[in-house]
Image (cartoon, rainbow, N blue to C red; front, side):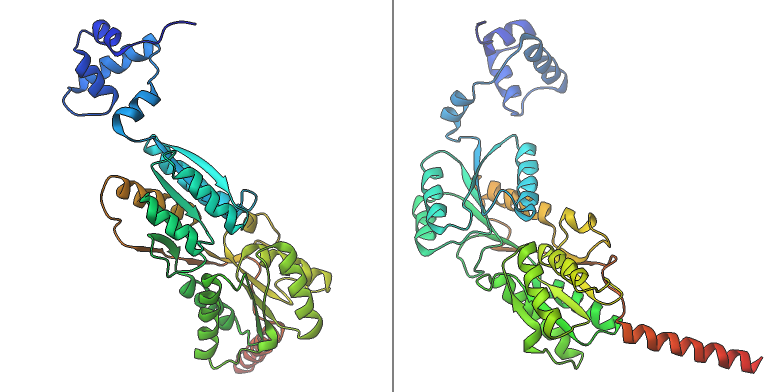
Length: 356
């Protein structure tokens, strides 16, 4: 095995001091652009590989960020992790990823493991955050940012999205199309975001003078199977003309439940999701949904975390990103509204003909 190339060898080859080489390789100021270019070129030609362990000992940092996510199979978490990874790559840092699969004991154990000097900070995605875990994080004094926690009153910097206005706008879209009998299928009731999303839906209905039928409100797990099962029960018993859901996976299950019942989407039943996962564009018809910027959430969390690691407070304790309604092919006026509009057009056409 060849010997490791040293800073002294690079300095000798480039004709500069070892201190200049060190500054250039560590991104410090004090060298001209020409010198920087020459040092980097020589380092590459000689095959220089930085000693990460030595750099960590000198700086007191590991160059690693812990990522604790609820799941590594759901697209929701994967899109956020992708944003985290992209932002860490920009900062030349690495991620140490752990999945808890909704297990609060495992979540606490992973935090205990990571905060024993393995990482410089932690990003948590949709964490359970029981009191023991929060106490551990505070006691270890490790920088942490949480994304979409189950509770929004946690005393930690957090990133969420505007769940209320996202769902309210989606409900308004259905109402504007002419729907009145609108069902709502939300996700896990233990999540405060689920409660907030339903509040947005409820307020849109109330302001439009429409009644929220309790028989048309249900909750299930954030899954295709949950959406399929719950929507099937509603369609069997209560015949809504539209279903608003708290997640894309639930919405995709509802679309297939409609097909099982011989209903066409959107001709007989409109369906709206929440997330704008890649699957929303891969189904037919493409899913109308509320987009939450998952990739941006991961990036925002990393930027806030790096600020804390550098000794600066985050811009705000609660970073809330906007949502937006994405109208695609699963929403349309209800059958009776389309029929009424068709009759109105026929009457209008006859009136124009009679005037001629």
